[in-house]
Amino acid sequence: DAGVIQSPRHEVTEMGQEVTLRCKPISGHDYLFWYRQTMMRGLELLIYFNNNVPIDDSGMPEDRFSAKMPNASFSTLKIQPSEPRDSAVYFCASSEKDGTQETQYFGPGTRLLVL
Amino acid sequence: QQQVKQSPQSLIVQKGGISIINCAYENTAFDYFPWYQQFPGKGPALLIAIRPDVSEKKEGRFTISFNKSAKQFSLHIMDSQPGDSATYFCAAGRGGYQKVTFGTGTKLQVIP
Image (cartoon, rainbow over all chains, first blue to last red; front, side, top):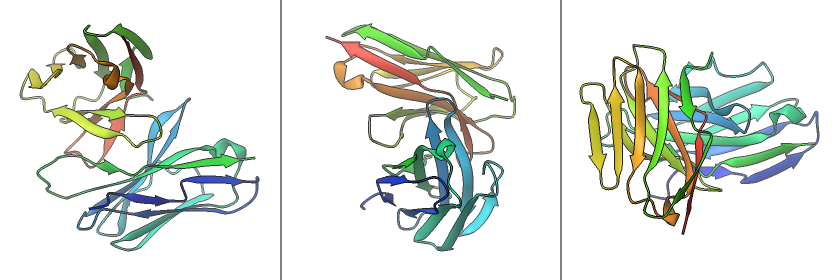
């Protein structure tokens, strides 16, 4: 398996622009997670899905952030409008419901810079 | 509110030495305690995990020690190698590994 795939790997945009981050989880995984990593706040869980349904979005910072999972193989995280403080590395992760390995598998991340 | 506190923030260890990273948690409902390893430019990857029914778990050079009464757990890396240089995150989860809270991370540098 190719692992969790994220795109783009790097994104530079200007304040006020819309940003869309994409994720393809590992095939067969039931759970999908979106995290944000910054030096100041560390690794924060933004939202996670189970079987394409959002289960907990309490970590989503504000209404400017939205996430969707239209099918089992694709998810998006959208920021509209973007602000400089959104600059961070965004990770997508996936996991099995009852896997032999009790772990989330992380993608390589998208490094976002909002100018 | 930071539910998982991790220390130190950074650590420099000589090759062959022991690296020790500590974490403390507040929520007694946590029942899953993993450690993740992250190399620059990569996502975190599970290193080792423990559940509170045991006080220690060892996998190769990596050992988790768990103290339930003190609500603390630690990662020991024996015979540290330059290839172990990475950022290490402790985490804690409730009811399984699907939703975990991460510590702030420890940047480990192992020097030759």
